[in-house]
Each structure stands twice: as C-alpha cells, then as structure tokens.
Image 1 (spheres, protein in one colour):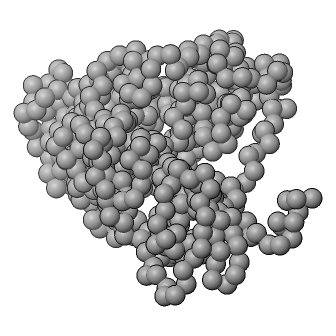
Image 2 (cartoon, helix red, strand yellow):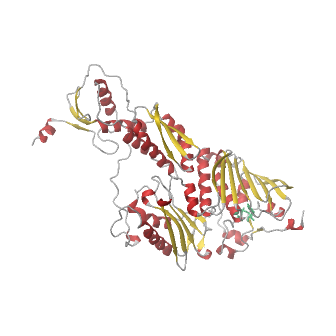
Image 3 (cartoon, protein in one colour):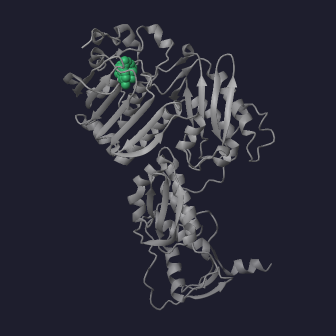
Length: 560
Ligand code: ADP
Ligand code: MG
C-alpha cells in the first residue's frame, strides 16, 4: 500500500455544523437509496454511471461509476454519519456545488441494509473492499478492482419490518427507481447512463445534448413537439425545453425543474409555469418541460429536506415572473388558439378557465347482469327507428324511447367498473403503440388487472405496447383508442385514483357497437333488463340522455 493510501479527504463534521443540517430520514424506499448513490457518482465526476436493480431494488441496487474513487481510509470513513468530503464549515452550506453535503446517505443506507463497496482511485494500484451490514462493519480489505466506485445494496429494510411492509410491488418500486434515474439523466446529458433491471438492459443513454436525451427518454415526442427556452438576467438564467400543449402526453403529471443541475420540486415555481399553460391544456394535465435554472449558490438553500429535492430561493418572486414570461413567449408559437390578450396578461390575472361541466362522481355500482335469462311471458313490443332508436312498450304498459348507442355505452361502462370477469376477444389486427419506459413499467404492473377484464397487453422490447385482445362483445376498431387511453393512464407519475373509471369511460365510448343495429326480440329483452340493472339508466357515461318516458303529456307536448 502506498503512503497516499493514508490520504484522507473525508472529515466528520463538527457538531455545530451537524446541528444546522436538518435531521431526518434519507432512505424511504429503494429509489431513495438509488438516488443517493447516483448523486455520489456524479459528485465523484463519473462519466459513465450504471445502475443495476433486482426485484425493484428490494433484492439489489448497484451503482457502478468510473469516478475519482476513494482512498482506503475514506472507504471506511464514508459510512460514518456526517462524514463528507464536500463541506467542512457552515459557510460552505451557502456555496454548494455538489449534490451531497450532509454526509449521511451512505451511513443511512448502511444502517438499514447490507452494503458492499469496491473503490479505487486512478492513482492507486489496489482498491478497497468494505462490507458493512445493518450498521456493523464486517470486512475491509485490499482488492483488485476497476478505477471508480461500486456500491451494492442488498437486503434493504430486512431489519426494519415497518419500512419493508410499506414497500409496493416490485414493478411499482422499479418505476420509482426509473423516475429517479431519469431525473439524474436529464440533469447530466453529457454523461453516460445505463439502467438494468433483473439482468436486462432497460435503457442506455450515451452522452448527448439535452434535447437528444429528452427524446431518448420520450420516444413518443419528436423535435417539433418541443421548443427551446433561454433567458438570462443579472440574477439568474434559464435554459431548457418545453413541450407544446398540443403534443403534451395526455396523462402527463410532471414537469421537471432543475436548480443548479439539481432536480428540485418547487410547487410555487411549477405553479407559475402551469398557469401559463392553463388555457391550453385540459385541467387534469400538467405541462411537460425541463427547466434548468442557474442561480448563485448563495441564493438558494437546498438544505430544506434530507433528500435535498426542495429549495428556498431568495428571488423566488422574480424567478416566477421571469419564467412566466419565458414560457409565454415560447408558447406563442403553439398552433393552438390562444386567448386574445394571453400574451399581455400579467401572470396573476391568468385565471383558470371555466371548467368543463363536472361529470357526476362515478356511482356506487352493484353488478348489473348482462345476460339475464328471459323472464317468461313478458314479450316486449318494440319498433326500431333508423337502426338506432328503440320505441319500447313494457309489460307494465309504459312506452320508452331509447337511444341504443347510449344504452350500450352505459351497460359496458358499468360492467367494466364492476370488474366482472370478462372474456377476452382476440384481435385480428392487434393495436400497437410506442411507449416510454415509465409507461411500460406501469402497464406491466397493471397487466394482471387488465387481463382479468379482457384486455390482453404485451410489452415489446420495453418500448412498445401491443393490445392483443379486448373484452368480448366490443368493437375491434375501438382497440386503438382504448390502447391510447391505457397509455394515458400509464403516463401519470402516480396512478390516477380514478384510472378504472377513466378506462371504463373509454371502453364504453370506443368499444360500443355502432348503429345501425339489427335486433332480435331476445336482444331487446336482454338489453332492456341490463339497462334497468344499471345504477344510472338515464344517462350515458358521457352525459347524453339514454331514454325518455313517452307519457301521454310528453306526446301531446310534441304536437302543440
Ligand atoms: P455526502 O454525499 O453528503 O458527502 P455520503 O454519505 O453520500 O455523503 O457520502 C460520504 C462521502 O463518501 C462523500 O462525501 C464522498 O467523499 C465519498 N463517496 C461516496 N460515494 C462515492 C463515490 N461513488 N465515489 C467517490 N467518493 C464517494
Ligand atoms: Mg451523497
């Protein structure tokens, strides 16, 4: 071992500094560990970062970098709480240029998992191997290894049952992992990022421009869908891209803000940007953008949460104003019709446009039977008009005028919402659409649920979704729009709580057979009984009237 093996970059922070660092938990789920390891690799000037996970990170998270590595002493010290090479005095908190500085990530991870570290500096011939499990050092030895650092995390939360129980399915955790990975990959397009899950390459992102990186992660977008942002003031500058409203993925839930290359959630600033899009996007869709804000480090405090993903900004008000105007200029190029005074409106006056008439909350539903046996001796008299409208005389002597299309949509909608087992009907021409890795991960997660309801999906090469079957009795031509609806649900950052309702609405709208209909007496009987079993037999899911009672008064009124 060389003398420089004793070189020590890491210091344990003095108590006074420790107290200025907000206490808290760093590791909440595999994705938080993955983020911290990624941050460390960036701080270590790595050019290629590889992420390996198994079982959504529950079984394994490994991050390998080709950065500056650590000396043997640092390789042990780095697991001490408040051990960091990045700051040494409180003053440094106000001039941060690194992602880490709290010196607690590795300590926190090693406290709740088994962690193995391999590290070697370019100047050393031999590296160091350290194993530490649940806070106890197990091993520290010289080892032959590549330049850079590999950290392997296994058995995460094995001794923290509460945390372990709060973990979601592998696929959900995988999606969180990818989300953190992409945030880091957007922030550093000039570096090479690779992600493997369960031994398979999920995505490889070679060094690129920011725009190329964005398009690599979002294959559904093209260059004409995004527009460049750039503005500089003496206090701060902004660069990045925004997706034009007409190209915004329908289920988008997140725009990306980076402050000094760090991914930050800042509701105030993000709200200001959303306001500019307000008149141009449906209320539930968030704008998609990548905004890179450069602010002097002294004017931003990221030491607000342990994960360092929130920030206080000295000039927040000015920054909001500036971003509003930058976005407004950029979006003026949108092809959508803008309100006449939109460009000149001060941001505070930009109001939410009158919302579309609220659709009633989905009713609580008891299963309507679609295939009731015919009741005996109650033959219905009916007349079909224009292949679509039915005049029906019931056994009780009532007459109804019924829109069969609306009725069909209503029955499909409630049947789907009730989650009755539905047989799949294979498609002669499967529907196919490209999807982002996030969408693929989400759809993989939902696959069993979809399957039970007659939707058979295949995820092809992690970038395409194929819809092979739709519920029996639906119109095959509806497969395309139904797949689109599914992708929309899958694009959301968190699964929208009303996703089933949304899917039901689309399935009803696009899957319902189209007029003209031909009807047998049996079909009329089944349809009428199914409609009566519906929670809301009078209106279609999109709010159209389904039936009118043709009372004597109603008929008379027609002739006055
Ligand atoms: P922080 O990043 O806040 O300093 P961490 O617990 O994440 O705290 O890491 C502690 C120290 O370990 C870092 O300051 C750094 O010196 C060293 N370190 C961690 N990961 C790496 C890495 N991948 N390459 C080189 N050094 C690292
Ligand atoms: Mg760190």
